[in-house]
Length: 452
Image (cartoon, rainbow, N blue to C red; front, side):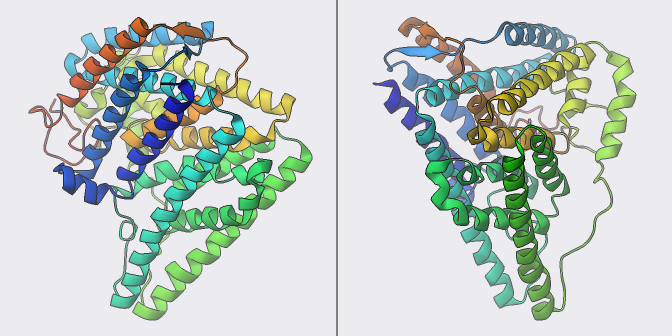
């Protein structure tokens, strides 16, 4: 098999599992006999990575990207400390399960990067745009149908009432913060310019849904990420970017006012809109983390340890903040290493944008920044499809890099497949494990809590 065929197969399969895990998850979970749509997403992600690693064994002339020295050192420090932390934790087995999940996602990054670098940029961007647009079309088709059904039945709806395929509407918001920026591709890629009006409509619809679902963190992330980008583009690009952002936001606000506020109020004499000023318990969770850190300052309480943390103010399986999660579960040393590495990579990418004025990469960087911002308010680094989407967006950052890769022989690829198979077996073997409490607080699976 040629690398080009494999790359297309990987992207198409990724799009299929993405749709099966979102738009069609209710029907597909019933078809395959999996109780929870959340668990279905985890199965799909693991199965996708396993299948992709199997397919790689049959590809000719495979060349993996070569990591920088900084990245190698950072990864080594992270995994060594994470393994030590896991063995000193209350549940070493579950700590190693979390490390295994991180490992399989790193392999997914390699597979994505391999495929992305084998494609022409214009073709890749068209494929990515077509994928996110198709996902948006199907999502909003169902959303509008449910909205009209609620009108016809004169039934009010809450933030979860118009979206299906997600245990929690925040799981959709986690995807939105990375999908919405990619819909900006026609404004910066000349070959896609004819889709500008289409993008304006669908970005506006995303804003309307963000407002309807009261996704304050997601909206803030999209705005903050765009503001950061404004400082690294030239004046003309900045003006175009601001204009496009304002158009889509205002259009989205108008759609929200008409279809979510005014019409329901007219038909049902009620509106689901309310201004929330609380933190939904997040501040309490973060304060708990900060108070607990001194007990295990250097190594943390162990990977996945928040699932069995004692005395939490809320029974969540993660603290809804990637930095707080790092601090609590991996300790200060790992946190400093990871945060420093992420900031250095972001700065390098933004500096490239500033010096090269390569406007085509703006939506790609925007998607990454937005996803990382939202990880400070939600479980982007925890939920299965959000994890995989973030890995894909990160892989797009290394496209067409100047660093040379290295050839991967058939033996290396077969060993990689065996490693992925073992990882997949370990992860899947934890499904409905007897140590998991029967409570709907997702982490690895929908029943994510572990007894202390």
